[in-house]
Length: 408
Ligand SMILES: Cc1cc2nc3c(=O)[nH]c(=O)nc-3n(C[C@H](O)[C@H](O)[C@H](O)COP(=O)(O)OP(=O)(O)OC[C@H]3O[C@@H](n4cnc5c(N)ncnc54)[C@H](O)[C@@H]3O)c2cc1C
Image (cartoon, rainbow, N blue to C red; front, side, top):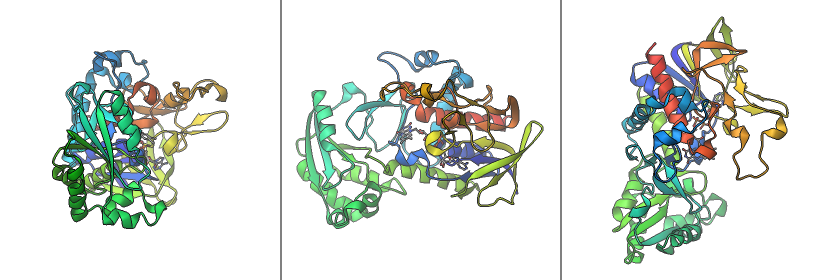
């Protein structure tokens, strides 16, 4: 079986890379073994954390030279950000981002965090624009959203934040089985009529509020339920991510996959690439666990397998390795040096990953594979928690790899 490109991993980076290639008429195959980290994400992508008054360019200049943004080249990044946002738009995904600066969002535990690009229905604001009176709405009995933390965090910023717990018959029915009362299941029962009744109940409570905040439990497959609740609430309203699973993240994954399929792409899920055949400086084909006898051939291959969380990288007591081909990986020291006992400190292991050259091409035993690229969280050099560059590295490296392939 021969394709133009085979992408290994169907998370944010694999999908964006594949969509970008497919939009340009390439025949692509994605093989993906499991859930991607989008299913746990906030519905907002981080590009880089900036200090007060600092520009993106200044923050990027302070990154180490092996950070993926430096490898790609800082002058390329504004264009790649635009292109990544365009890919999401063309997939029908409504987003919010400001030209060249971060906005703020609220986490499930009420902390404020910077973001580059947020799904349209999620909270996004500049601190000086925050309203004075907020109502935080919780769904009665739902444990993966902490309205009290959120209200207290807003209170610390001088915002008057009240809380109310509401339910509709659909959520009460679901609540009969406590273990089923999770975000994705709530989103399944909150359809048009239930949403209208919930909005009515909110409107009764929100007379004094300037802004209504709700858990993001609307719209697993499409945006409409999320848009509907915000439209039906009389006041300004936004959604806050819940603890995992993330409804906006699941929807983002599904809408990107749908866009890829609509462009003629082939997505093989629940299968895992487990090896490949290299001839000279080229990867010829890969094999999967479910189809060990088939050689999946392509002109180019993109490794988009994520980091340790997604098994794109693996570790034993004495080494860190890439499990499919044994690609060259950057890690330092021995096991004891990989972790900082202070869990809040920067963790060295987070910047471990697959080495690439400036064109994102991978190597094995020091020899570059001319037609194989790595993108996303499996790249070395980024310390995502420290730099706040998680989704940005995935999205921009994916778009860059597609561009490099198309320009050959
Ligand atoms: C819990 C959690 C929450 C996060 N929240 C946010 C957030 O709110 N905002 C943000 O910007 N970033 C967030 N991130 C960071 C997130 O990792 C990136 O934003 C981005 O989604 C990562 O995309 P990726 O494609 O690089 O990797 P992944 O999402 O890890 O996707 C890799 C995919 O490759 C598959 N795969 C691995 N090995 C193989 C194989 N051998 N064969 C086939 N498939 C394979 C995996 O199953 C997975 O589906 C979060 C990360 C985690 C872990």
